[in-house]
Image 1 (cartoon, rainbow, N blue to C red):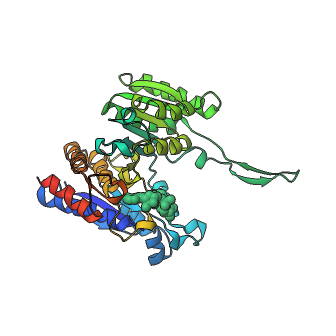
Image 2: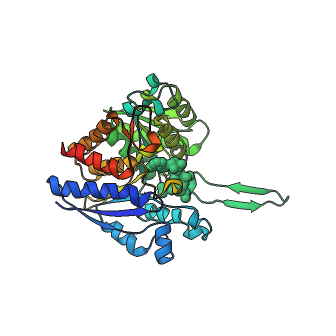
Image 3: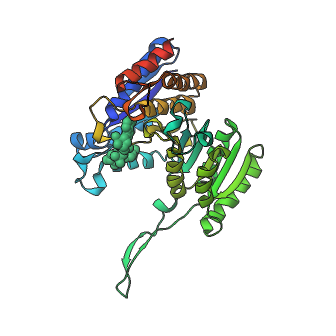
Length: 365
Ligand code: NAD
């Protein structure tokens, strides 16, 4: 069956890295039984330049009807002075909000060949493979009331509201437990149940969900601050970590840095499965638009290629193809072929385009 992919290259290095995936898609169409149909659209600064808005309703509707979306990155100094509500990042927030992409999947995977890029000792991170599942559309970033007010005594007060409902906790919990079943069968649920009511509810609802539907998966509750410490002390104790929007923001960046290389980190943001069995999903590298290296042919496309691999795995269920693509990345790195950002002694530096070509020739071999 033909799968429709909406491609949003974005700004800065976005078009360069995304075009390596477009080459890959062409290769899959010509050399395998997979069949993809793609359409490109604008987001971020590129869309501001063309339409005066970072993400138009027309592009949103195309994303809504696609089977999956691949994005490069948005933003850059050119748009630093545009109004706050039409800045490039507002386009991405609109996409996530409109498609209700509530589950953010951030793998932290250490490739053997890049083990020296981590700031931790090799024996602590060797073989590391963690999946952080962050709730993305609720919690303190969206809770009301929020604001900055002036008190009677003239002092100012800033306030936000941390809020979660049973259904918000349960749906992110289900994503985490289902993922763990396909991995090492262990979930750490992280909150601050010791000092926050929303954390107490989170812990209770996760416990109920576990008892009701996922008894075969190991569940451990952990305070988020302890999780931050454990990630540095003994990260290999984790398989899947599920946590809220705020703690997930911080813990996923911390876990990502255990791997040492921003150009290698993919992500997925998934929505609920609709009644027709369809799930909205956005795949994008974790890094930004890297304007400092744009148009130089030196950007690392592997985070974007690995995001496409996540698409094959989570949107389309093409597990074997995803495994093969992940292995191709591993093989290329083992052969010492590197883009500038992960360059090391005795390795060969190659360009963004060459990296895309090497992955294709590895898949073809
Ligand atoms: P960044 O991730 O773009 O870059 C940080 C550093 O990492 C830079 O030195 C950059 O050259 C390097 N880098 C990033 N990706 C790389 C890759 N694939 N290959 C080689 N080197 C890479 O973060 P920043 O500089 O803070 O932000 C730049 C712009 O990106 C800003 O406008 C920011 O708002 C935006 N941004 C967008 C997203 C997104 O689209 N999801 C995420 C983060 C930042």
